[in-house]
Image (cartoon, rainbow, N blue to C red; front, side):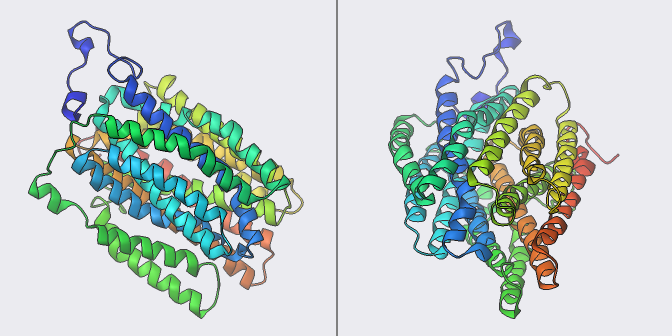
Length: 473
């Protein structure tokens, strides 16, 4: 089905009931996308809780920002590549390649003999994840009318429920009883056959847009992949640079920041960083929210496992609770709160995330139970589950049908930029505090407190992303 067909008047306009996401017209697409989210969610939720343990086992705790950030850096390139490819020939080909790469990266990471091989594995995983995320979002925009998109995005979040219930706790137990490597190898075996089957289904599925040749003007307006590559390089250099506090590391930070400043604006809508009304603000919101959540999800488990000595299986429970509550909040915004303006839900979600950051700060003090810091993760997930689909809907509402791939690529790019910048900044503050003689827990408290800035900024500028305001005022 083409984008034009997806956006035509609803059957309800002629007296027929409007079709749902499981109607005969959309059932195949819905089940395909749900399968993709299930597989990627299961792998992601099982791997992430084991990364602090893997970094510690490979004597690479100081490089943990690069272990986490290498994934994000590659996602920048994967997102742009997936968006270009999806606009040119439909979303199914980049989606299939992304699924194959996601299996390969598990094998690379599982066999790591050094932290640098683990970084390489995470980099490939980020490339795959970027392609898959943009391809799925683009396909939803191309395949569903606007009134079904919030429900479909909620369905994508719901597809993570079973992986979230099973993945983190089982991964924690396996890592404690056997090894974190067993987690990676096991996931590769479990996901290989379904991934191959999905690729076969996607190859057989008809694609009405596979032969579409973009107009010359549209091709010229797209950012070159070289720009995305330089941006990924800058992100990776920056993440490595903040792992230390000497002249060599500062040089890497300087080069990385320079590349980001020069190339990032070329991949984003004009006015993104100054929160211009419409799509630029929606893209900005994606960067601020995802950056904050990613940093909480990366640094809170690292602090709990390496400093507060919380068991990996316990941290896995926090990941499970986070994923479930994200899905519940996402379902609520699409079903119970469907009549509430999307930008208002973004504001509420931002404020919830601010409260979660306060929990992380409080839980960083030695005299306070580490469970308070752990509670920051599921609370932040509630905020993200509520606002993230709303930000996506707002961005799609500002995009023409033939530019959906470009729009979702910009959203993915700024999501990854936000994750890189916020995590790097928090890590730099943490390392600066340690260099100045602050205790490690004190450094974490300072780093977490700075996350209040992006969360409160989200609540302030969310209204500028709404579509129904044509001008200033």
